[in-house]
Length: 517
Image (cartoon, rainbow, N blue to C red):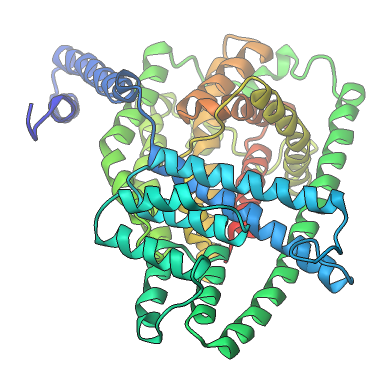
């Protein structure tokens, strides 16, 4: 339909019926336009979600970025391990006869894994010169044959591909680069890689093959120091994750002895149930209206993603963080306003009371509620680890959350302000908005008529499904169930907010440690 497509028509119908339902005073007409609004929103959401399924397509550029980041992480980890052993008296890579067969096999396996991820990145984005360039750097640094991959880069055509292929040849085959071309070579390395291991090793190699051995040696020393520090951070991260997972398992097992068989008595139901039965149409209206708004704003998210999906130099991480903050606020905060207008306002109950946002619940004060949230977060760690293993065993393709490639790119060059901004945007805000909507509104609505098990399953399923991430569905379901159960146990939304915030922030910090520059 040209530039004005089906989605645009549906958005106009949503806007028109919404304005009519808001402005018209006649009760009968108002109801009719409200139903028309529900139908228009449903059609828009259905059409938007159907399109990727109908085309059987995925966001391959995002997958390429994640695979490339994974390959770089494995190579950086392998280099860090080698540096640690070198400082201890015997390197694992490049040592003439000094490495054990098991150590050499470990390095070979890590290089093979890195290469596999790099090749997957090329497969997902075959037209990207940057992805092919990154694969060739890994081949060169691993001292693997690069004939086929180099020929494939040349066959891509275009001036950039030809220049990138020539640079790779000079870096890893002829080991000679005219000094006059050094500046252009460095610029190309910067444009085709993100800040991190790939750019570091490529830059050092450019200085070396262009005859500046002293500069290359100084950079090499700095590079090795950073690798040792990186290895320390990775070890600390793994030890911390192991300890937290073990503590979480102990807390989880303890629940079988300390939790009551019936979490909420009939007399206490009002403490966890919504003020009244909102009815299916109102609950459906809240969620379909929110999703329709998400569909309307999705082009803005795509524009932000383009900043990092075409790797031509590092994006400004602070600007990306601010854009994500604006978009997230625009697309998620209105869901709470819709819940208030459509369902909660008519009850006459304050919003925070309706969603059970209490800082004191029974004999639980704010400190104990926060501790309950921390305990729930710890319990979630081993449960999600097991669910991730199950998903992988079932041949899951893994998470395709579009925010992950953005994070993996921008955290490489972000300072303290950027890190704090991303933790607030991706760690704190989702905990506030999503917990209020899924636990404070949906779960309490279900508890008016239904038991704990039914309400947990339905709300957790909705929570996992709305993320549109099939590869992470089971993990998201587990998280949703844990968050609902801790709310049921404490009769307060605060612990689930704390647990959600800790989970998102912890995941973000792990990515910053793994992929950070």
